[in-house]
Length: 166
Image (cartoon, rainbow, N blue to C red; front, side, top):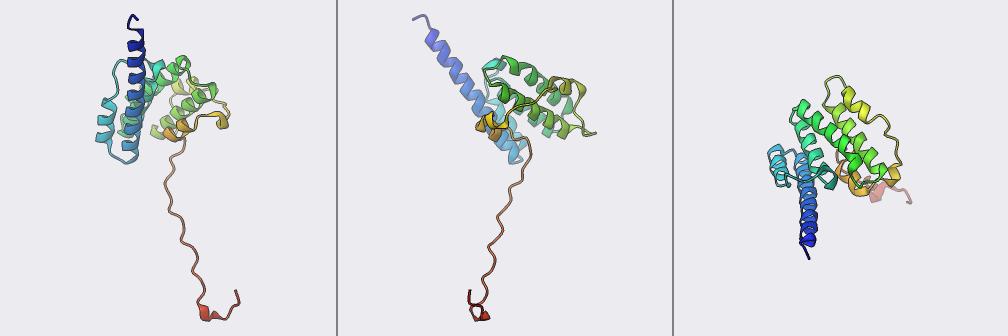
């Protein structure tokens, strides 16, 4: 009646665009294409609240910065995400999982194998039930960097003239 439906629809579209941009940026980063990852992330809406899904592109931007060797901006973005997660509608387990993900990425980027004190303080209590964490969240932000392995070929069959019955 007064444009409330249009505003709500526009907000949903912005959240969807932000989520898609973050997904595409992380896929490009996984493929090793840093320039494409930054281009994909630039498609995200600029003025989206952290609680409305703005944490996704911010987290992707932090991971891209850390991968590019820009430690300070990447760590600052990770801390912003950790601070803003309490305002989101995510479950407690999802929030704890994302905080742990941020801590792992900070450890990966550090020179001495330790995350900065400020981030460790924010992620101090990260206990959660991993079975309750969203599967989509686990797929988008994996804690471990897993390399794809090719399955081993099946063992060769013995030649028919070997004389064994089976």
